[in-house]
Image (cartoon, rainbow, N blue to C red; front, side):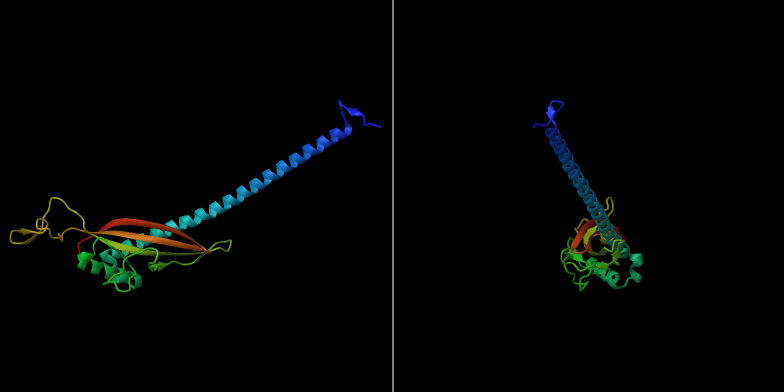
Length: 210
């Protein structure tokens, strides 16, 4: 005996269509939920990465500020450890102009005969305290730094007499009345598990005549 018709369709056919529609809706809702959860997870990862990247930038800024502070002659007398190393290197570079234009590692074992600065192999000038987040993640920041003596800061409309009728700039000599110009670079590293976040920053500064 055939099933009775319902709006031109048999009851069995109508029930089958209803089940198919319900299954399709269920699959669609499941896919949407999975997509939303993946997006949420991605946002969490991006948020964490942004925080660690910002920390690396801040550490690089700290390296620049540290170097600038100890390059200042007013602070040299109280320099110790890494700062004393930087001060000794600064004096050595000022005394030997042949090293001008070359970057040297602040933590060179011999400041008077400094090692060329290569960020990948440079010794950390300062290791900052380890940071532990509320989630238990450990971040270990540090930075290495290098300095380059760029010679004297050019000053126009002046000359320096070094003898009777002789002037250093006119003879190709170096004017001791001009400030010293330096390029300072800091390379920050933030170790998070097996991942290292890196940020580099470089500035040029001048120091008064010594």
